[in-house]
Each structure stands twice: as structure tokens, then as C-alpha cells.
Amino acid sequence: MHYVSTRGSAPALGFEDVTLAGLASDGGLYLPESWPSFSDGDIRALSGLSYVETAVRVMAPFVAGSLGEEELRELCTAAYGRFSHDAVTPLVQLDHRHWLLELFHGPTLAFKDVALQLLGQLFERFLSRRDDHLTIVGATSGDTGSAAIDAVAGREKIDIFMLHPEGRVSDVQRRQMTTVLAPNVYNIAIDGSFDDAQALVKAMFNDAAFSRRFNVSAVNSINWARLMAQVVYYFYAGVRLGAPDRAIAFSVPTGNFGDVFAGYVAAQMGLPVAKLMVATNVNDILHRALAEGDYSQGQVVPTATPSMDIQVSSNFERLLFDAGGRDGKALAEQMKGFEASRAMRLTNAQREGASKLFTSARVDADGMTMAMRWAYDAAGQVIDPHSAIGLAAARTVDLDPAIPVVTLATAHAAKFPTAVERATGIRPGLPSRVGDLFAREEAYAKLPCTFEAVTAYVAERATPRG
Ligand SMILES: *Cc1c(COP(=O)(O)O)cnc(C)c1O
Image (cartoon, rainbow, N blue to C red):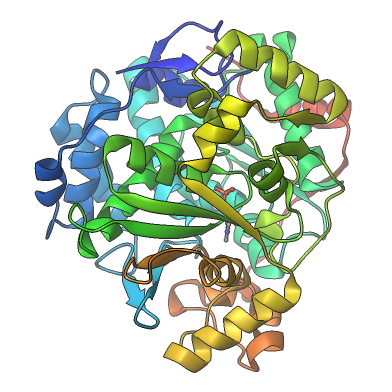
């Protein structure tokens, strides 16, 4: 399988190179040059398979040429062996129509573990083949950071530098990052928003001198391997609810557009997806883009769902590319315009391409609270604020009531105990596997949100290219 950049001028690469590179050299994002296609028979053959076997079947075409099936199985077994539920991503029924797909049974209690536990395994495998070293630089609104750090802590060929917006992640989120005291882990609290931190990371990647010196890579969802790993649970859930013979809708609490784009990929591969609901909080750039074609960046408003407090959704570029006819040169121009003015209009082709599958909803704090209460009253489920945004949006979806609607439950309620307690009166306790989090020692640097300060900090500590 070869991968092409959304901006049309970076060279096509294989899966191994794409995984280690993260961002394409022309500033674009990698996508497979064509979508693998699963027949109804292929999908039917997934029924009853374990999560790991489903993962092997779904991902095999994407890694072809870089990993054999047996190697892929080995890496998936190691990655998903660390989940606390045997089904890895179990489904829970809320009422006749609504389901939760629980994605938070990994080590750091959010769905990002599903992708990052595998990415950690992939990095190690590919780096040992090349005898190379990797410097991971990432920005996190909370959950990516802890999941990435858990996935690579203590790995010899990797250093990780993780920027988080100071004071804008929950205590549990921060401690899950800052209490990992492995020598290859560096946490940095930035005086700014998540978008500021992400822009800084992008600037480091685009800095020629920096990337000559260090073999830098991304673990944000701009990394294709992460999206690929997330495609698996759409199939796993879809098959359990009747695919290929019944269509299924998914509602996805969305920030960087990674998770919901994985649903789009599953649909391109042949999974019968009736609708993908893009659920946003009041930081609603994606809702405005999908509903009105207006992709213009507003100010980030901090909410009870920090992992969705985003005004620039990196992976949206992948949809604009694929749904808009895969014209890399034109998209490069469009994105350049956006980067200059922080606003753009979607083309008609992009809007039409997107509207076939996507719909969207903006959910405010009241809507979130009501969804949390409803899940508890209807089915005794205590859900986290992000999942509640997804569920609130799911309950507005305009579809034949016979179609099951699956809300992706992206975090464990215990990651956001204060917001959950405010809505439901119940304070969720941490599962025993992370129980001593508040007793552990923390370590992190505090830096101003400037390119100079952060680059200097990383350059002093990272291992240069061999
Ligand atoms: C990251 C995250 C999201 C948003 O996912 P994207 O792939 O960025 O759209 C939603 N909920 C939780 C809990 C998250 O950690």
C-alpha cells in the first residue's frame, strides 16, 4: 500500500515510512492512494472474531508491504493485551435504539489508547529494523498526551516531548502524564491554549534546521497509523449490530476530526454506515463547516470537555482532500489561504462529498448535562462529558428509528469526576488499575508558548539523528 499527501507534492511512501514521518514533507497529511474494499462476504466473515483478529483483517491491507499478517497479529496482541476488558471495545445498550461503544478500557482511560498502544508497538518494530532513534513532539488537550506517554515510556529508541496547555487539562489527565518519570518522557506545560501548542509543534516540524538535527515524528492524529487503528472498532461494533445486512449510524464526540474520520474510512471500505454524526461542544468550527461551509477559526472557549476544545481540526484536511476529488495542488492553495486568514469556504464539491455521510450538531453545557442524566436514568450508565456530547447529538439524529445509533464513549467518567458529579450527583471513582494516581510524584517544565523557548528545551534534551 502506498500513501499520498493531501497537498500533492510530497513523495508517495509506504506504511513504515508514513508511520515514522507523521506529517508529510509538504505540510500535508498522508492517506492511502486508494481505499481497500471489503465485500459483504468479507464483512460477514468478521462476525464472531475477537478484537485482535478483527484488527488483523481490517488493517492488513493498509500495512501490506511493511508488515506480514503474523507480525501484525503479534503487535495487536501486545497492544490490546493491555486493555482491561476482554472485548477491548465493548458495546452497551442504552435503550431500543441507542448504544455506547466503550473505548476507554485501555491504560489511560480514553479512546486514544486504542490507537496509541498499537503505535508504540509499530514505532518499536520499525525503529529496531532501522536502528534509528525517534524524537516525538506532540501537543495534547489532555488525552493524547497520557496515552502516548504510556505507549512509549521506557522505550530506548524514543524520546517524547509532550506540550499541554497549562491549567486547561483535568487533574487526572495532567497526573497521568506528569507522574510517568521514565527518562525518555518530558512534559511541558505551555502558557497558552491547545491550538497555540499545536501550532508550535507544527512550526517545529516545518523548521528545516530542527528536522535535520532530529528525527522528529508526530503522535497526534495527523499520524495515519492512529486513524487506521481506529477504523477497527467501527467494523467490530458494526458487525455485532448486523452489518453487512443492516446499516448503522455512529455519533462521535469530535475535536481534531480523527476519530470520526476513521468512521469515514470504514464506510469507504464497505461498512454500511447510515450516518456519521459529528458532535461538537460550543467550539463548533466543524459544525459550522459541515452545516454552512464556513471553516473559520473562532476563539477557543474552555469547557467541561477539554479534549474537544479545538478550533482547528487537523484531520478535516483529509476529508476535504478525499471528498473534494483528491486535488492536492488545489487543496494546498486552499490551506495556504486558511493558514493566512484563519478562514475559508468549502468548495461545492467538498460540501457535497461530505454531506453524503456526515451530519453535525453543536451541544452546549445544558445539552451535555441532560445527556449524562438521561444515560443514568435510562440505563444506569455514568458517562463522561465527552461521551455525553456525543450522546446528546445522537439523540437528535434524523434517521429511520430502525437504524441503531452507536455513540462512541471516548473517556471513562472517572477522568472528569467533577463535571460528572455536577451533572449526576455521582462522583465516579478511578478504576483500581490507576488507583494510586494521586499519590505519585509529578515532574514537568513550565515554558512560555514561544517557538524559541520550546525548541531550545527540546534541543538540549533530545537524542540527535545517528
Ligand atoms: C481526543 C478526544 C476526543 C476528540 O477526538 P478527535 O479524534 O480529536 O476528534 C473526544 N473525546 C475524548 C475523550 C478525547 O480524548
